Length: 82
Image (cartoon, rainbow, N blue to C red; front, side, top):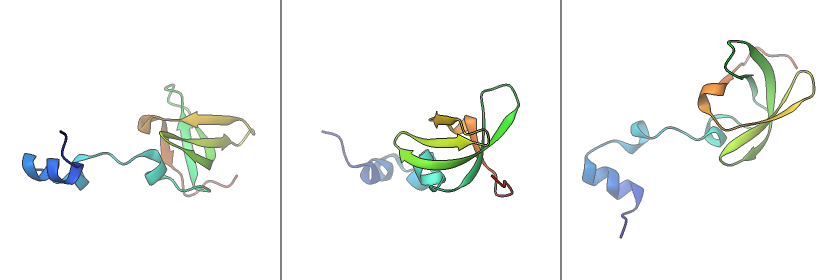
């Protein structure tokens, strides 16, 4: 039987709030301005339009829709004007 995550952390002696990476749906609110990349060091401005665990749907400045599931492919961009 598996213990609830809070009890597992206590048994292991770790702080789960610091040990676990937040999910994208917890990191970026719908309407948040972000940037996305496909690994080529070019970042496209976008806006989160929908949560769909395990990722988020975004629309870029060209109107294209993307489903992002990797925290290395998205970052906050508070200065974006879409």
